[in-house]
Amino acid sequence: MSPSSPSKFIRQDLKGKSLRGQRLRGASFLECDLRGCDFSRTDLTAARFVRCRTGFYPQKGCLLGIPVLLAIALMFHAISSLVFATMGTLPGQAAWPYVLALHTALAIATVSTGLQTLSFFWAKVAAPPAHASTAALAGFFYGGRLADNDPTVAVAGAVFLGMVGLLAAWRRAFGLIQALFAMMGAIAAYGLAFLVWTNGSNLLTTGSWGRGSLLAATSLACIGVSLRSAVYGWQQLRRAATTSFREADLTDCAFVETPMPHN
Image 1 (cartoon, helix red, strand yellow):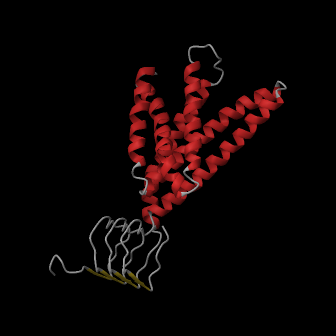
Image 2 (cartoon, one colour):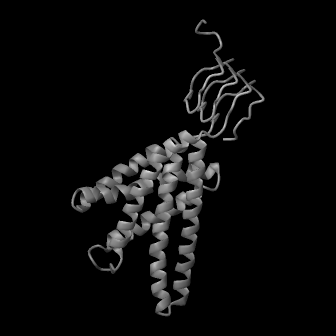
């Protein structure tokens, strides 16, 4: 077969494989198992898929779920530690600026993470601040922890991982990255919900019904964002383990007795 001749795949097991970005013009896929196969940005002009299996590949989903679970565990440890460390801190104390910074970072992460679950447009707009803020929170905690709570190192860790989060936002078409940061954002939103609820309940017990009720409603909204982000993260993880034709060139492509996943 010459390099320019169309490729032929006959009864091949391509489960979980990556053909991302390849040139497969006029390729023929006959009775192949394509579950979890990645055709993102692949040139499939005039390709034919005949009686192929497509869809979700559980083994790939389990494998991709490992880094997501690890990120959830690390983020939960970081957020819970930061939240409990700030409880009881009063205005005027030396640690008060860090309390304000934590509230601000959690609010940015919560709002941007919630926005990116609304539509593809908002996913593009909100992904950079969502990824950067959640990564910065983890970087602040673990940077400080590795340096015996040195605030300078903690801030440097936040800046470094925040930049990593921004770079990851550019890979928004990669479902694993979306899933990972959506789950981290869900943890951040829950952390903010806990902080706001604590402040709101204190106000309610002292008779400040107006501000207390407002904070309680805000806490419930944060919980809603957390749940929605968790569902969104699961959807993105499942999408990453499903046959993907995202941004592929499917001009004159034929699917004969082959279901095409909608992703």
